[in-house]
Image 1 (tube, each protein chain N blue to C red):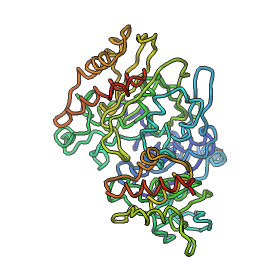
Image 2: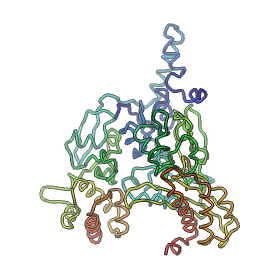
Image 3: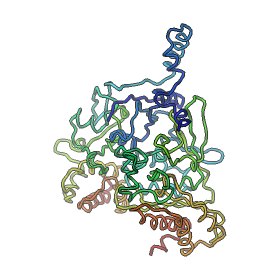
Image 4: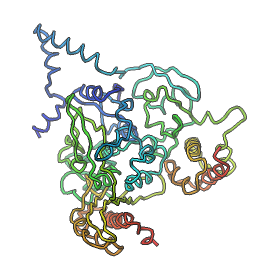
Length: 207
Length: 332
C-alpha cells in the first residue's frame, strides 16, 4: 500500500514544486521557481474558474453573454440563466430518458452531459426554436397528430431527438427509427405514436 | 456538483501539463457522457477538468503501417462512418447496440474504455469496492448486476466498457502519455484494466497525470469478428453480459480464436481455455454451444446473479455464430 501511495503522489505527497514554494528563504531556489513558473505560464493553457467566468453561448441564433462557473452544465445554463425550460432535467429520475436533448451543430446531445463552457462557439438549438410565430415544425405537428405524448415531461427532448434523427436520416425506416431513438425510450406507452410520427415525416422526405 | 477549474489545452503536451497540477487530482473530459454525471453524483471529485476536445491530434482515425489509430475524441458515430474500421465488424456492432443518437454523437471510444463502473454502490458514493463500515455492500446486498468471474477479492463490480471485449479480442493497445512530458507507452488493452484490491488502485493502470490519447487496432485483414450483447430493455441500456470473438478460419474450420466476455468481471474476461478448445474444430451451432459451456464453466456467481452465467454462455455462443454468419439461422 505504501508503495502504491508513493506512486500516486496523492495528498500529502511530496513533489519538487511544493518544495520550491516552501523554500522561499533560499534566494537561489526562489529564482529557479520564478523562472520555472514563467516558462509554465507561457506553455500552459489558460485555467478558468473555479469562480465565475464569462461564457458566450449561441442559442437559437442569438448570442448570450453569461457569467457562470465552469461546473455549470449546458442544461443548467439554458434553464436557469436563459429561461429556456423546454429541455428538462431528468437527473432525479436517474435514467437518461433523453428529456434534456438539444441539438448542437446538427447533432442530438444530452444537455446535462455538456458543460456550458465547452460549447462556446457551437450552434445550440433548443425545442423553443421549432416554433416561429404560428409556424411549428413538422415534428411537433406530427406529435400532436399521432397523440405521441403521455405525461409530456420527455416530449420536448423527444421532439428534439426526432428532429436531429430525421435531419441525419431523412428517409429512415421504422427499424432505424426504433433503434435511433432508443436514447429517449424509458417505459412510456406512446412510442407507437412517436415512431408513427417519425415514419410519416420520413416517408415525406424528412422535412 | 463541487466547483472545479476548467482547462482546454490545444496540444497533448499542454494536456499532460494541465493534468499534473493539483498533485494530479484532475480529470479528463472528452464526450462527458460519464464524467459529468459522476461529478454530479459526487461519486468522484476533482480539482480541475481538462477538456481534450480542442487537441487536433486526437480528432482523427488514421491508418498506420500495421493498423489503425483512433484518437481519443473520435465519437462513436464518426467511428461507424470511417472506412478504416469497415472490416472491424464487432466494433460496428457494439456502436449500433448503443441505440441512442445522443450517446453515439457525444461518446468516444476511448471514453468508453475509461468509464467508471456502473455499480450502484460506486455511483452512490461507496467507492469502486462498494464498502461501508468494513463490509462489502455488493457481497451482502443487491448484486444482481455484479461480477460472476474474478470476484473472489474485494472488487465485485463489472468493467463498464462495452468496447473492451471486442477490442481485447482484436489485440488492441492504448497509447498512454504522461505524467512526465516525454512519457509515452503503448499498453496492450488486455493489461489496461485492473481488479483493485484497494480503493486507491482504481479500475485501470492510469496514474494521475496520464491520459489515453489513442487506441491502436490491427488491420482487419481476413479476421472474422463479432460481438453479442445481452440487453434488458429496448431503449438506452447497458449489457448484462456480452462477448466478442475474433476468428481465423479455413472453410468451416477454426484456425485461431480469441473469445472475450464483458460485463461479467471487473476486467474484460478472456476465455483462453474455450478459445483453445475451438481451434481445429468445425464451427456449427452445436460446437458454439459447447464452447459457450466451457467459457462459463468456472463462473463463481454471487447471491443474486447466477442468471448472468447463462447470459454469458449465450453471448459467447451467439457471437461465435455471428462471426461466421450463422446466427440468424440459429435463432429461428
